[in-house]
Image 1 (cartoon, rainbow, N blue to C red):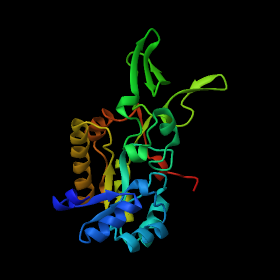
Image 2: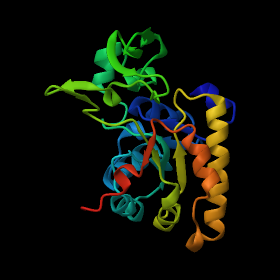
Image 3: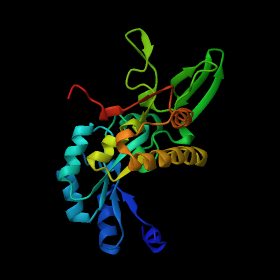
Image 4: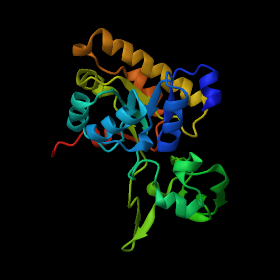
Length: 251
């Protein structure tokens, strides 16, 4: 924390209350953002972190629908950032007991759902096997997309059938919703980069920068370009994309 502050970082993202307490007392002028792993899903929680630790932005978890996000924005004392592209999470952010069980490492402290040391790939007669902590989580045939290896997106035998029992390997892509997010007062869009390559980061951020600029210029007529979606599809997890929890027509 001291090194980051001394180097002049624009902002620091934190979730741990001890780290936040140290930062706000030792470096009162440092911009502090509450991480998505802080799991602040309502404005009361956000107000607590703002009043006690001086945070000025919150990345809200990926479990909120758009109406819920709007409600938080309208009552939050600080700016709100939402996830716009990348993986989805079915757990309480950063506290996946499945990953901890399979790898022996907590995603919240290690910083990865699936530590590279726990991932193993095996070529077999049935196809390419993916194992996490020795546990078989996926087998894909030649030409089939292999998603980022996590327990929640693995295929399991349930009731005599093998399928994605917890979550399918889809990617969150909210580009079509940019006018709605802008209208809701969102301050920033989070692009997931955990365990991603520099090439991935460059490719995705370039496309999203163009989309954000186009939406800001003419939100009423904004529509994602075909070439943008094609570029994002190259790095999407699995073969599908979704709006995730933002789109819940039953609410």
